Image 1: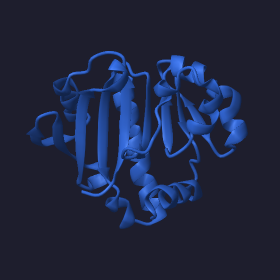
Image 2: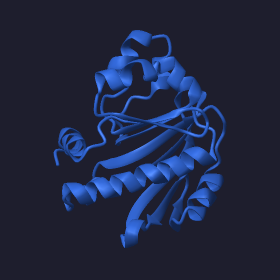
Image 3: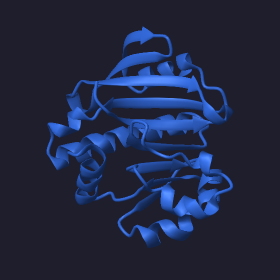
Image 4: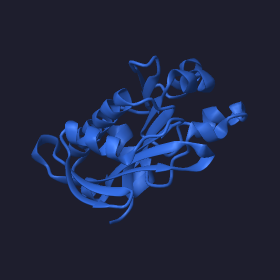
Length: 192
């Protein structure tokens, strides 16, 4: 497996792997293989069968993480419209997971490249620069959106961004929701 495109979510509350697995099955994924904290699941957006790794673990900052990812090579075989459809469906899956649990933040980014806001506490000046870097979409709880001041600068700094309200009072920010924006993201992050 090459570099993954992954949804990663951060929560202050413990999230059991079995609970995440059950929710993913409820959302239409099927379990393929279980190994320790890693499950291979099959996701079938619009009839495509995609292998997704799903992980739940306790990590840095004494926080809990949920990570879903698929190999970015799947995007290499598609034109921009097909890639956009697939990524939009992955963001929609992420939103369903977001709505089912209590997360502080989440992002759609290349594996091990993104920068979570939680680690920037106390560094308000760098949030505006770092928050949009290396990710396509950002999920923010109400607390995280307030800390980041996202409503104050995101649309000003990123005119092609979209900010969608989330049921918990938070926001989903897609930095450039256009086909060109996705093409730029894939080119910059995956050399596609």
